[in-house]
Image (cartoon, rainbow, N blue to C red; front, side, top):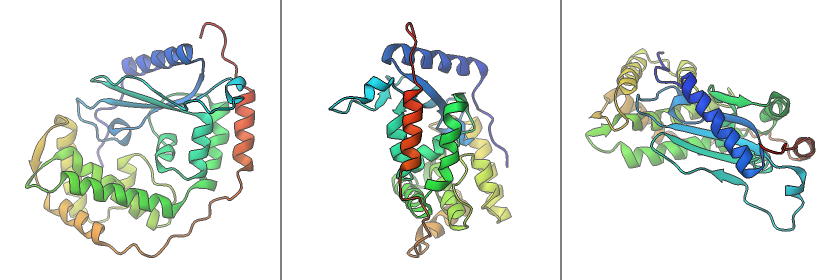
Length: 269
C-alpha cells in the first residue's frame, strides 16, 4: 500500500508552531497538542491539498471560575492553505466521555506538530476506556452514505471523494472485526481490512493518481471500488455492537483538575 507522497515538510511544521505561539499569546492559553487532521494525516493528500491543523488548549484556572461559560473553541480565519481550529481541554474531555470519533482521530494523527507529553499521555491512556464501537460505526457509516450521495453519483466523479467514502467504510469494517478504534492512516486501514487483491490493486492505482493530481481532478467511475461501496452501504448493520464504555467520569474529572491547576501562562506569551 503506497501512501504519503504529500505530507508535511519542515517549513510548514515551523509555520504551524509559530501559529500556536501566536494563539497562546493572543488568547492567553497553553497549547498542549497540535496535529494534522485532514488528507495529509490520512495519507492521501494531493499536491495542492490544504493543511487542516487541529489543537487542544488549556486556560489558566481563573478562566474556569465563571458563572457563565465562555467560548470553548478557537477558530482562525481560513486561507487558501491553512485551516486552523482548536478545542478547549474541558470540551475535549467531555467529547472523549461521549466517545466522539473526531477527537479520537485527532489523538491518533501520525502528523503531530507539537505535544506536551506530560499532559497528553494521561489522556491517551484513557482513550480505550471510552471508545464506543456502536457509536463509531454509526458515525463512519453515516459519513460514507452522505459522501456517496453527494459526490459519487455521476459517470465522472471527483477522485478525492472516493477516499471520503472508502475511508469511513473501511473504518466501519475494522470496528466490526472487533479491532477497536480504527487507525487514522489510510494505508493501515487498508492493510487491516482489504483482502480482495483486485480491489486492492484498484485502490492503489486510484491513490497514485490522487497523490499526483489536483484536488479538483475528475475521472471515470472505478467499477470494483464502486461495487465494493454499494455492497457495504447495503449491508445489514442492525445487530448492535458491544459497548463497554466507562459510566463514571471520575478519571476525566481528575485529569481536568490536575491539568488546569498545573497550567500557567507566562507573561509575554
